[in-house]
Length: 388
Picture 1 (tube, rainbow, N blue to C red):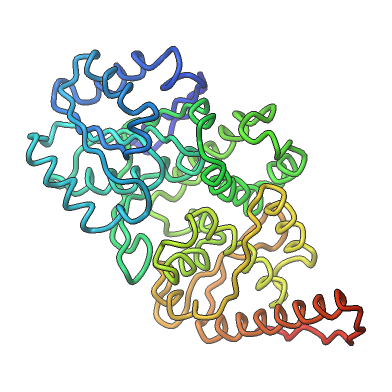
Picture 2 (picture 1 turned 60 degrees about the horizontal axis):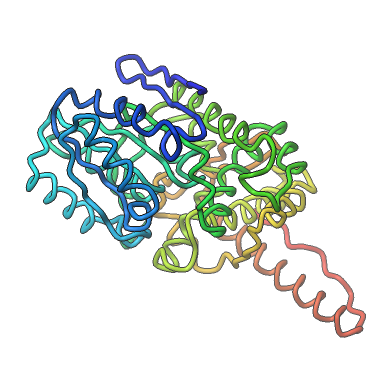
């Protein structure tokens, strides 16, 4: 078992990483660890219908055998549950089953379950403890660590939330064996993000990893642990996201806008982040911040891991203006300087809009030239518009 301690003083907690910890031979021991946090008080076990059927019910039974007074709160899977209505339903369940201030919320699921249950824990009786048992790759490497909890509203993603650190995180890479391909690829967007923005060695390692083997690739458990370690170190340095932690949002400003544009229905969070990273890398190159060739290399890695979706940037600027990182008429864009290095650039929204318009024009020219080449018709290439 690998243990990573997130050192936050009185809010410090352990992240335990071991294959079989939850789904294999060790679920009772893991359940005992969770039950110990509640110290005899009731535990609200929050999961979704898919996770409940695939192993959540078994872990719930392990909690009961560990002596916990546990009750289930099962939600429908998907982003549509992560809203104020979903938060209200959890609060009603907590009230019905008598969750007290000394009780515990145990979230077993992907990012939606963790974000929603974590925010419910943050707000129930002004804050109760909660444990995270992430079952998706995205939740393992990103959303289960760091205490960001939130729900979506029509105006944007995660606009209503709170910082509320978990008391324990249990990561079992063995759970990925049954994860749908689309969800695994969604998580890979966050893995690639760590390498692209913060760790060149991780990026290079991903370029050499057997993409077809997915989570079964040799050393993939170590990749998960590396990502968690990077996240934990940054959270220790900047718990409330006022400085360096913002670098973890590479691709997210554009990605969140894309999610909101389609009502959180067309793309998973990771798919939208992957598209956002493409846009951010191309934007960075266009304005002279990002080393030339970086976007092509990043897009090649995204393609290799099956994150091939592309989207235009039209209609995004109004949504970007509502991003949490927007202040006044400017937004903090996370842009790469090169692979493995990123920085925060406070950028006027008018300049972002002009830059996105330049990218859109360049993209249209690329498509026209590609169509002309396919038809065998030579066409002169025009220079790319520079973005302010």
